[in-house]
Length: 265
Image (cartoon, rainbow, N blue to C red; front, side, top):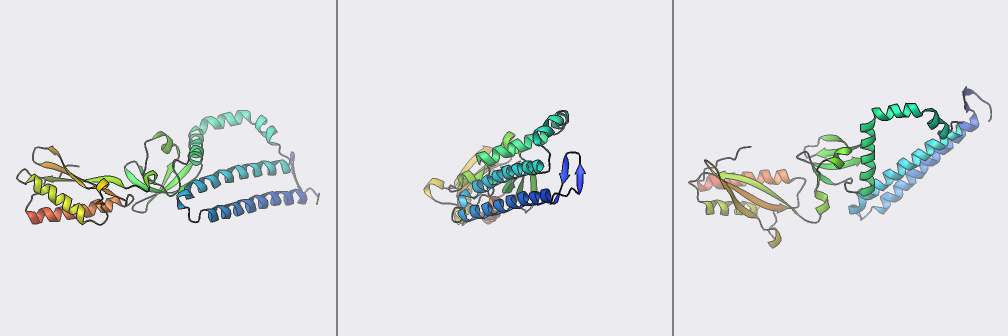
């Protein structure tokens, strides 16, 4: 068991050392697997805590594997303190070259600890709605409404404005649709048609607190600009709700003989 079949400076590999490395790796892998199963069982019936529990597991996983690597280096004869002291200049050079990576990693640690953004959250980032599917130390994976996968560096969640719709998971959110009509139209009729479209849509709430509103926003050169304000629980699919409302508005305006003047943009 002590036969040295490979020697590289202070590193000496023997069957006993290889067995020790396998033992450390196997123990670490088994411990994390058991821990992950325990966390999964604890998540049953508690979907609201799933993101936070997943974040906690990631933190524990990184810490455990770091300690396991340190132990394996010690087993083969590489002392971490000696390595750090001998490579100080190299580490300084690498540090200057990987500042952005370090920034992303620190941002990922903050995200995992604070829980402000978690797996399963619905975010509005750079003008589009996304679903958080994975949070790692350096990057996070998001899925857009059309199924595209986005890889986002974690510092964007710290340094930029991000709307987290999931923080109001139990409360509906407010959205709006614009519609333009020429001055020949009766503004009260336009208001009633907009409210009728909202009342007929199954995903637009009608409760007293969340009653749809039809507002006359402004008088432009060739049109009156109206806004239909509504509340819905379909936050991730709100563009579908908006599209259906636009179809309904267009149909009712056409039936009522109201000529639309589409707002620019």
